[in-house]
Length: 293
Image 1 (spheres, rainbow, N blue to C red):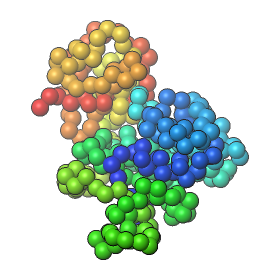
Image 2 (cartoon, rainbow, N blue to C red):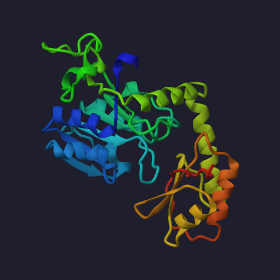
Image 3 (tube, rainbow, N blue to C red):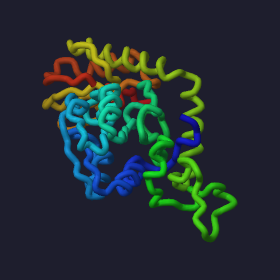
Image 4 (cartoon, helix red, strand yellow):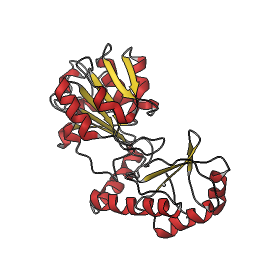
């Protein structure tokens, strides 16, 4: 991928909406319980959306599948999609691929060039303010997606072509750009500069080591996700908050995640808060396991 393949915007769902509006009668294969920012745009566009279990996604792809939409990492519980299998199935059956990498970019190595469209919100693992998002578009599908929300920033030379007709869209993926929320992108640039100093493979190892330290402390098997999701009914979220640990509760589960700003002390603090808590089955997938600073 090159900068010419990348569009910038505010959020993930408007990007997905561009794809969906360009393929209004597509047969879309998606995952049960995936984030609705990925699902709703296809549903509102009138696409035929079929949802299946994450671990069966690739095997169900067939010649009737026009598009596969899946989050690289599930927001609710941290499970990882088998992107190798998805890419292979899409290639065999000629299906387009739309990958939501919001919960992956920043800690999980991912080659966006293997997929037709990859979208990612910046405010999660790459530590941007809200109001920043990215979309990569393969040159092979660029002409199939209509920039329905094109504004002055989608022009070939935005500062020179911001008045009057005719249509003068950028020749590359910049045609999908939305005018940036300036202050958010100033902060985003600083965050990206920091991330460039630490390779994603190193971040992955750091995050996974901490997440598995948490799992081990809870008597769980090691996992492959930086997100740890725990089924509990006895107020674990409140106990974590009282201890100074920030966690999320999603679909009845306590979700914790470990990232660059965490260390072993944060994990041990979470373990102290969770000691004696009864958990149900934990998924492979700690979000926001940070000490209050």
